[in-house]
Image (cartoon, rainbow, N blue to C red; front, side, top):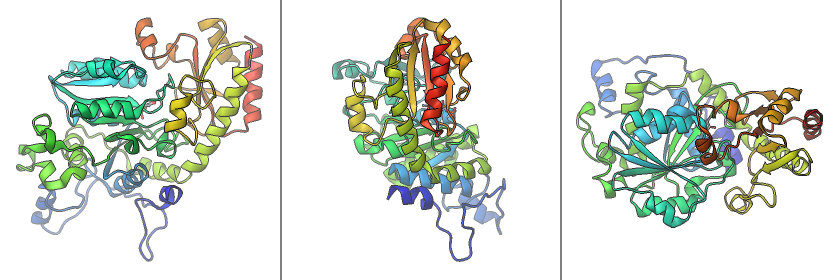
Length: 423
Ligand code: PLP
């Protein structure tokens, strides 16, 4: 069961072993013979040789997240950005195309629209509220994946995962869902047809703003061999690993993650420090308790803001009447996370004045933290976007993103009230 897996998933100590996930703070691992080590390099035997590729602490925490998402294999990375990049670069290269929801985190948008474009991978950004016809029209013969966020940061649009999965599968490509804001407590995208899940574990999974990190989980459901021509990296021999064919050697459930570890971790080295993975594993232990309180507090605050005369609009999918309320009821029945966005009457200047007046909530680029944080994205995370791009990403110039923490809701409401009074 979910709560139990948050505590015990991925690590079960044997007699006399440490109660907590041990921190294996070692770059290397010793072997008796070169032959033993050679087998590891050829992926013929399981084991560790160098932490850039794999480390036991990282793997135990990855296995915990894998269990929570209901996947077949998972890996940790040094950041959510690395997870987003690896998730796509593992199956796409120069000349390929990806369909992505337009309402995604600003850093992911930049990675896709600027950096990966420079690498020759093209993205079509599509409004997640589009019709099925519009969605289908975005595909090209060279499309290799579809990408979206369960709850978009900061637009808070809820992805219709089934609609996106149906379109992806009818074009023979996997759906990758960034499940950072929802967390597997709130939504398990694999149950709705997603094939791969990514996380910025920096957010709710860690939950205490202690460690930047990322994760990728494979559902094991996508049949790479059925579309072998599209995914030669998985379905034909890898010369850099002595001719291994990942789908043949590791099956449908293990091929994608093994390839990402063996090739991309080897070459890019986006490995988390074992200490950070330990902190992540610790954070996950209280995930269900924290998420319940985050959702409860956010709902109270959303209700307060909705009725405030100086608030021009509010977006919280857990609030009745919200544009995404019905989708949230379907995909996020336990709660729509702790992030609320709203506009302060008076536009950009009023928003900035409001922010400066807050005493308890901290101005921080962070979200999904035990402590309440607040941000004006148009002047921070999304400042690289022009007005049209901001609009496509669902970010208006007056948008305030409030990440409601675990404080007493009444204290938070008092802080908002005094800051709004001074606007
Ligand atoms: N995905 C989402 C939804 C995010 O909110 C973020 C960061 O805010 C990222 C990915 C990137 O994660 P990180 O900051 O851990 O690199």
